[in-house]
Image (cartoon, rainbow, N blue to C red):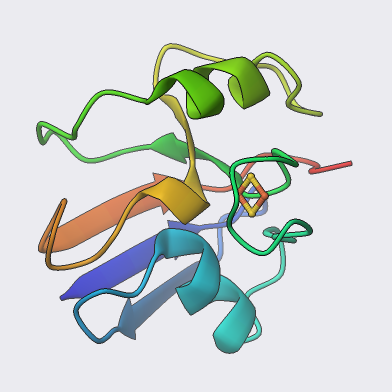
Amino acid sequence: PCITYLHPDGRRDEIAVDAGTTVMRAAVGNGIEGIVGECGGQAMCATCHVYIDSDIELPRACEDEEEMLECTAAERLANSRLGCQLRAGEHFDALVVRLPERQV
Ligand code: FES
């Protein structure tokens, strides 16, 4: 699987990841700024907020994710998701996400 991160300044990082890796973990593990992942992927911090830029069907946000999406630092949009809840290989094969201006 592959994840592409689009930065607010126009930079783009494309990363090949192992199946099972989340959008948050892949960013943190590869030094991609713009995703913090403070709670370690428990859907409890909203510092892994991303905007989905791919035209694919993702599983709906669970209740915990929905709740945390109310607390994002940057504006929540219709395509807002928590990066820690999206798993490569399971929920998508290739995904493009846009990073918000800020996470805290
Ligand atoms: Fe905390 Fe995703 S890492 S909500």
